[in-house]
Image (tube, rainbow, N blue to C red):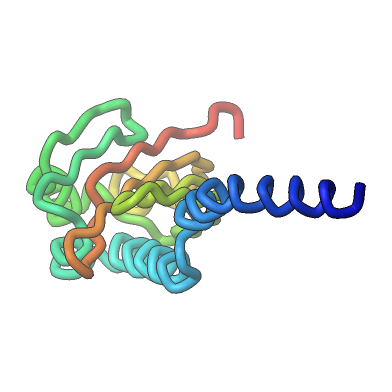
Length: 155
């Protein structure tokens, strides 16, 4: 019975190897996770500092946003123009990443944000939001291709 059990176990392990390899290929290298976290931080700081040049580097030309005002900005130029005109301005911008999922050359980042708008129309009230950012790798370069953010009511 020992030999038969061992033979069955080896057969089972050999059959499972492709499944194990596929599962491991779904897990990104730690370097990809660290890079996306770094890009998220660069993007957060660029928005906070109204750094249009950095945002142009980080956001794909196909960048699309569903923003907290329930408006869709279907291209990057519209969002960059909002930054230039001072419509996207914060005295505080914190982001907490809660999950990152990779699918080949796509990274999906989800979490929460706290912002304090500033400027003439700002109320200086703390705004709590949920967000999803989507990044795509082309070659060795990751760029944000889509974003959704919404205000958490009653917070």
